[in-house]
Length: 239
Length: 366
Image (cartoon, rainbow over all chains, first blue to last red):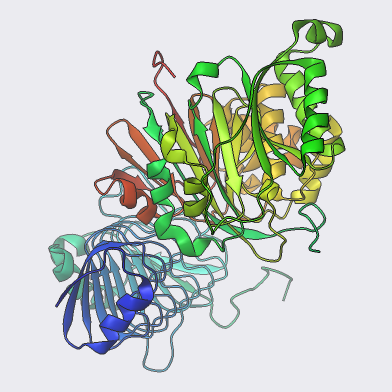
């Protein structure tokens, strides 16, 4: 079903989405917040620019954005997938604990801040371009992957990634020396097990954006993990 | 009765937007009002405002003083004070459109003035400095009078309300400027007052600000040593004076001023590859440590002939930039840009502390 959301407020949009079932195409979207918040069992395709907190608390729905998305995409999401064909703003995937966020372009600051995992749930945030500063700040679980494709002359990840990281895994499509990382983290090249995991999680991503998975995989990957037993060793006090 | 602004401290979250024509083409205020519509939820109806540049071409050699008065008597005594130092070319009420959304209006006047040559000669001051001193004098000593705009060929328009209503109230569709900035305010525990709305202006420089700076008092104590008076306790006022001090008094470039207020971390400076850059940042941080502005902010500084957008170094507020033909757009949200230019190109988010400076092309008539 196609809904023209021009001049429609976010409350009305979400009521329409909740009241009907099936697939939706929202056209002329411009800045409405909270689209699809908390929803499951729906497919929502958005044309235009959705507002902040797109798919917050998402619980199984699939959202696709044709262009860019703004701040706090997938805030605290639990399940489902958000696919963004452009760039995303700051704080994408804030505290998400399940589901997937696929971004073709680049992410702003604080992507994946405080991502976590819970029992069988482990979220994935995949960024095609580059990531801004504070990527994966306080990461507690899940996987953050940055591919660095089509990023111009920007570094694959900007300043202070992984600050306060104490769980989960970050993978960057670059050699270990390329990104400036804080002390106190395990940094290594991808091993066979990592490669198998990469292949698995990149399958859907490459399909969504029409990339050849073998070309994407044919590159050095850096894997970053915290010392989960003592993640803040000497960060604040000597312990 | 609620205390007036200035009696209490006001934290705020907000929306900002701006548009500039690089060829100096004049645009009505209609578009910038429209840009604020998708960001409605970023404001709470307790303040908003606009600054337009190039809007008074017929008086472009005179300072345009925009003023709020609480009574006719205040206005009379303010006019007497102005006449001591200025020639007043025109004095008039700023035209407004009565509407239910805007209430408790003060008297809103504008004066096109030039400082008297004899007074400048006696005081040995240049005209900008004399205007600044007069603005400070009125705002601190003349109770019930407030100068909220004091530049040449530009003006700010602000009130308590939502920005869309304020734009209509001031009839900005009837003005034409080559650059516009806008602000929607979300003061969280405040008696929002007309004077406390953004933009804050001194001479031709205006600031709209989204954020809440935590260095306010440190910055205020420093800047007040140089004759500035922070009368309203709002962080944006102090940013406006810092910019005036760095740019007009110290003669820094816009880029250098940005490096002072949003200085990189020492660790980031140490990692700079270019030795000149490294030394420059070291010098600026060591020379102006009290003007480092910490806490979240995204600001747009308007000035004669251009705009500068800047985020705090940690980028705790959002800001995007886009372009189309000769226009450059800046806003808290991309949706604001798309609202007025659906086909905007090169949408990007500047990094924290990375200034975006846009100027009208040299030679363009503004």
